[in-house]
Image 1 (cartoon, rainbow, N blue to C red):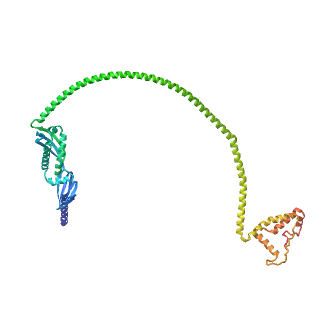
Image 2: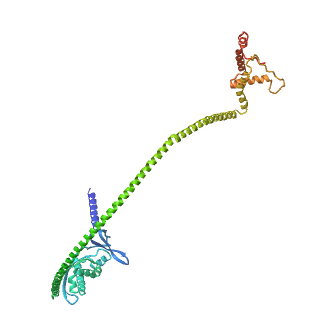
Image 3: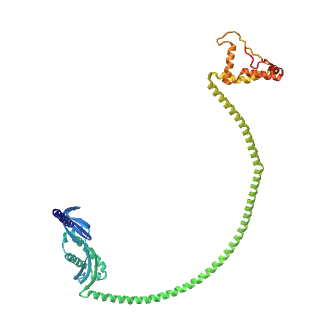
Length: 437
């Protein structure tokens, strides 16, 4: 337990030492001061400096290599008193003023201040600035007359600031403001100058008063003259206004006559325009009646005839389309049947042909059909055998029994004649088809 406490104590001591060392390494800079870290070298332009600057921020010091110094940039109020300063003309003057001076916060002027005022107290810096300002003030007083110094102190202060600007820049200082508070002399020159000025002011006032009296009389005469001229001008204006009124009355009467004639003409023109509108309406009415009575009925008849012609043509077209479709179907069936197409077509047409042939022998009763072979021989067998085969094929393929059909035709004709019906009803009569020999 004791070794652990000792180790913790050592760690806490090391941490405390580290924090203390870290606190000594980190430096904060306020906005109204500048930190100088001396030791590290840097180059600005063609100049080399052995320090670096931090203005308004935080900087870290390199241990054992850098030292930190602070320089205050706040304002310094310097009272300036110059006694027995001879102005132009040899008049000794005493001038009192106040200046606001501070160390420059921008480079390269700040570098001049660091080189001259590093680690110096503010009192010593203020004494150096005061001596510089007083020397410049004496130099300027030597170029100005007492009248110039006393009459325009603002211009005098501006010239002083411009004169001292270069000297203060070399020192690293900046003059914010410079005010002259009082100017005195020991010989009474300014008092005499004041009395002279007062006498001149009195003289000027009396002259001005006399001139004002004379000017007042002149203005009175001028006012009387202007009043007379105004009366004359008013009378002339009245006469001119009367003449203008008479002229205006004559012009108004003339305009009234012209307006009356113009109104008459415009009325006739409006009447003619109205009549023109009426005639145009009548023309449109006649055009509408013509359109309704003649043009529209003619168009209706024309459309009816066109519809009738289209209907007639439509039936013809449909019939032609039907025939064409039938022919196309027949052609397709013909192509599909192949080599047997012709025989099939003939067999399809055989029934109406047989019906037509049998209709010519209505009074003939067929009891027996005999087919006689010509006996010429041939490779296809006898004629009766081929005929029987053909009849059987027709019956199997198309369902048409030619022998039955012939029998039916014969019986129908016999019934129509009367005798064949009785014979068919006798016993022993054959109901089947006539025998084929």
